[in-house]
Image (tube, rainbow, N blue to C red; front, side, top):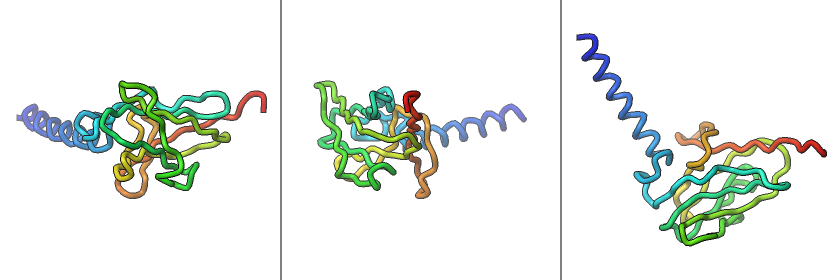
Length: 136
């Protein structure tokens, strides 16, 4: 009896977790707009390269604490036929929250970045930390 009760609770919990992950883009095939993870944010030179895959999006922007959450300032470029969208943004050392904005309306956390925080609106923001360079 206890095992049956545990199994039912576990199944319900697993289902709830799956729906939460789908909703925040961790299983992008279920989230619509064909958003797929890339490698996550990558430190390059004095900036950070952000990227995401989508073969359906017509426009991808990045909005975050580094650009006053503007969905039109930092547009990613479509860099290949597989749907890779990329942008490199020069960022000073610090901690930044961000989301991708798909076609000007759908705000999603970076599916390639597991560092997240509550966004205060029932969702999550992705987080990137830019360390101080050794030569600074």
